[in-house]
Length: 495
Image 1 (cartoon, rainbow, N blue to C red):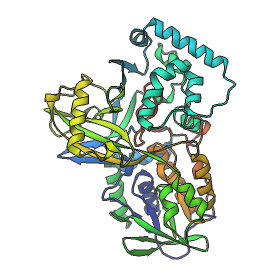
Image 2: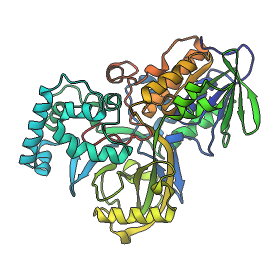
Image 3: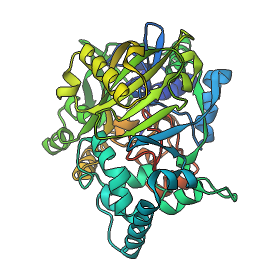
Image 4: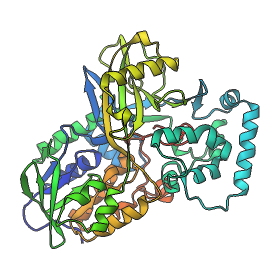
């Protein structure tokens, strides 16, 4: 059973992202001794705010929206009036034109055209007639709910650009988790004048956002942790987790061994199995080494003059360019850009760590971004005054054909370590939004301190919980709200 040791050793928190900092904050508030180990020199993990020359970059576009009263109360407690309420505007750039999202019936007909619309509807009717077929892949899941024509037009190319794998390789569970509640029928209802009723989760038209970006939340939280006596060690990658009698007793980092009473880990599952001492069984290590991630990088361009478009972000469904999404930081918060005579936009490129795109020199990536945004007709190249590059490793866990079996193997091993709790997106290898990640941390602290028996792995695990549970939280705080599929027709905002 989970629980703290009886000595006065601190609780170790592995990782200073949204989940790790929330766990440390909750522990410190309870008067518990806590030490946070963060491998990098920055806090916030996948949801940090980078700062270059005074310009602030949200790495992924993290809307703060949740159905969890606990998470919302925590946001208010930490930042209060610094949490802005912002209007949401996002569109899809498709075939050289903008398609509004949320959908508007007249706009869809005008942009897609009556003939193509008729083909889409016929394709949808055929898909509904075959609804008894099982959904194995992402492609199966989307085709069954939107029809093959819409899948090919809006989902396939964009999804494969984002994930770097074929749509028939991604598992249906990913779609069920991220876009449950949306179908062609619900999207069509949203496109027509409202008659009341529930609005699909992807159609939220305003959201909360820290005045200085998501990093402001984590900075304020870290300050409170330190004020309560907690410790955050930056540049301290954990290289050993000492386990005795089925309990974590010490954490090794930077050549130093720290005795601990328990551990809450948000480090990637792939890494966790490799730092256990004694070593995890070979099947567990093999399962961990097979887990895959999608990485991305942001090229933030400083642009002379006002914002080139009003959107918070735009999805780029154009095979002629490599960029997948473009953020407009001033539209998220005017305080993200220091010079009112300039704006700043972030071009997001999805890649694998170490591949050709990831490995390009920063100056080449800035040149690429300048050329592509000009090719799209959004910003003339001569208006670009400069740029900065930020790389984000392990941003999105990949739900491939083997991931579920691999995670289950690792989970069974973890179940034998009484005082170790896994939390967060990478800690669970689950594509959670940040509010879900924060909720997993809250539940982990309750397991350790209160003797609760929450199943952390159940948070945002299936569409029923995700859509209707009390803890159902579809924040759009997740690191990216990321690159889901054709996010334009699906869960928007990016991840």
